[in-house]
Length: 408
Image (cartoon, rainbow, N blue to C red; front, side, top):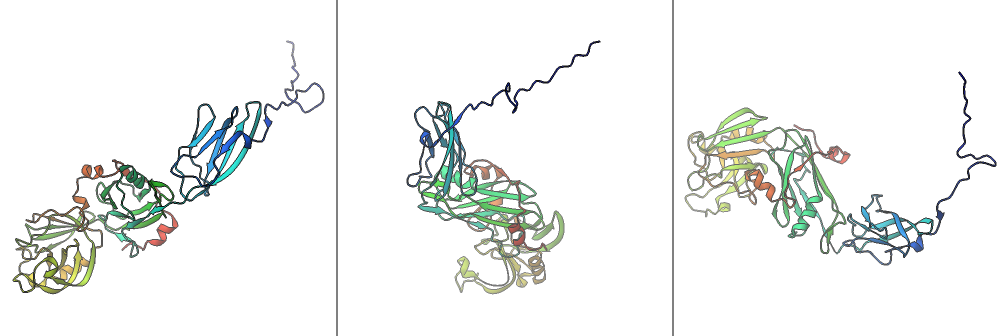
């Protein structure tokens, strides 16, 4: 057999004669005359920023970046004669733009520019709740709250606000926003928060247009943890309070609730606060001094569940009726010993549910947190975006961890 050896062929060589020469397909040109950048004066952030090409030239690439290095999305026209932003520009922000273009005659180049957007006339900020300045640990019924600095009525503006709100929790849940009024939003999961979860709420629409003349202000963040799942079921028919922790019955306490004419509200309530010693006066609920129903008492171990004055508290004067009759003016009363135990084993955000009372249903809003009495499908309808959201996301930044006290 004959062995045929083929000599290698050099396609491009840096050697002498006979080698293929490197070809420059494009000349480097000054691209500044090829495009027009809007850099004169300050740019309106509510309008798209546009780059246009000179006659005969084409735009091949545009990069628009903010001071943090993040790029603003944009779209190049099909004829490559213009480009404009599709993402949001922030108010009062300096941007840099880099444009690559060709002159249509074999010449290409790049040019750069900078511009600053107009300062916002009004800034929208948000106060977030719950306040985590204390232990940072709440019950599983605690809703998240957002109080805006200005009323937001327009549906599109409300959507913009919701896009700036992020809820992250570990474990993750499905939840949703509810616009209580033009300045107030609440967030809750479909069911209660998981026990011993970490939760982080953020609002960040800084510099973004919310409505005409209104832009997002400084961002805000809060974090907290949930404790065990604590649920107290008050049965006004059997005059018993059943205390469950993580689904297990821990204690059963004889109680008395509101008598006819003062019946305790039915429904799910959330613990709002606790006072080891509080003065209770009938005048605060519209009972005049001197009336046969009037009272002015020093009350121990009071756990508040409505702003109008409904508590779970010590009522040593009614021990004989506890477990048998309803004789209070709307509160859930128990012995001093039992009230102290309940006080010490309950925290803000825990659940107190009343059933079988002759009273009205707990208000969803305005008298505490009756959020859980709203049907989930109805709840979602009151979101500006009209859909539930997942809380899957990171809650593990240093600021979150340092703000949280150990659980008890």
